[in-house]
Image (cartoon, rainbow, N blue to C red):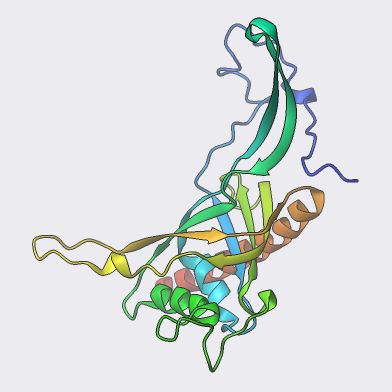
Length: 230
């Protein structure tokens, strides 16, 4: 069975720096990992438009994924002497959260409302009579998440989620105050059945990220050339 966690090579980290905890002067030996560079690609169920997934990838500004907790089983004896043994291993809450920028026309509200409407129409209280579905395949999608180095291309961590669906329609974000004019961003939790990591997920994510990066750089270069052409 494959190990879902890759084992890195630590050879270049062997430079002796115990007193400083690898703190400077080691540019040939160590590169830090910083956050802020990520991609999340959604594959919504077939009953939704396929371009929904690409749009969500574009407007997602942050992602929080769950940790993995080892639950312990404790054994107690006389005088409360005790020892512990590993029990179950599970994801924290089986949820990941994404923050999306909302735009005029409210596309995020439309996407999340349409997604939830498949399995629970707010008017009828059942799956949508015209476009709903009672099978999991009708309303559950997939997602691939990846973080990179600041080149935006070298994937460091990747996770694939299956059985994905939103747990909220963000209508609460549309409250208003005449004394302020704030941008609207939605924090939306997604439920998932399984979260996969490992070499295969890392390779799939790397291919996706490479495609996104190449197309984005090409588009930016095209805009630059158009702007600078006399």
